[in-house]
Image (cartoon, rainbow, N blue to C red):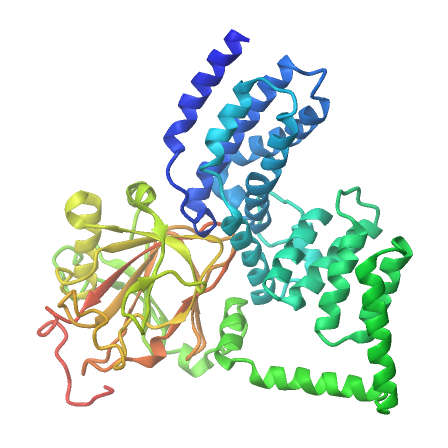
Length: 536
């Protein structure tokens, strides 16, 4: 065993460089790729232990072999693997839940090599917040892209490299997380999916009794009493002595009898449910509906007459000396607000440099709290970001100069280059880049005025989802690696252009890297003079 202990010491030394404090893994695919390597190292350590105690640990060996194949595939293409949201969720679930269960199992009779290795590493594993965040991301993707539970469970998503599926136990876990959030709609969907897969013969540790218990209550909470009774009866057929189910059945029968006494027919109840549903539809935020439709590639379309006014061209930055002989390719994406895309504007080498500089600094992206004026995390912005200064890298400096040359705006008063990596289901719901009149102090500390314009680099292709959409006008701009889009947030008068309200759609499949530059008013007085008309 001495040689084994020596090996564990070496393995532990190899893993420790990854051991930084836990930081919202689910919000960045870039950080989650490190977890793939960590999980692979744990599998190797586990397999080495099994060789020493194979006769005692046959059950653990089978479990490890299953994961060995999975991690082999994942480590060959971590970002592609985690681009599938089901793989990302299951990674969170394995490291937060299943490895802990394995730890409890092996503690019964085991030398301290593997367990000490894993115990040290577990403090840097994803936690309940990560697992819950990844689960919520799957539910968000389901809603935004109109995915039924069976499609998502079977992993039948567009553009996936590594097909993966959810087990009945995984579906049960998603349903439980929805239940703890009092989200009975998704609780019903995922408990029914778990039940369906068990009825189809899937071998699982998930228990139909537990599933039916959650499912019947979720259905009842949504007002479908007859279905809740039917599910409770099915539960009692499996477990006649189930105390809560027996109590619920008596209560349901009491409610049903009371409704009959009040002469409320089932038809009336259905009509009432339809009225409530219709009310909910009317009460549904119109912006949210437009946002989700645009994310799916639906919604408003530009008329042919307007489309004819959009052009592509070679652009020299208004005769900028650097681009007169080598102009860049530019095309119009939208007319009002005017959104232009620059093609082949950042090289693969520059992208990799920016990503490598940003990765060690990635932290949960924040937003301005309008009440406190301070930066805070928010559920509607799921990503990690880092800031890069021009003085720290010639590549970043060159990028800043390029933005200045092509926009004609002074970048000396701009914010640093922000690099963002979106996690599983990563998104940024509709927002403005500029400060409104009710936020006069938003950029006061910078002393450079409001954000006059936005420059956005796309540093990766996205297999599905991840568009930048403008709900006010119905525009959808799709990520394309090596390109950048640019628009003005303010009119020349300095008034905000409210049509620039935009959003980053959830990433359905793939990995999204972007970087952006927010240019400010100061320094642009002669570069973009203001006009007499407020909205010109």
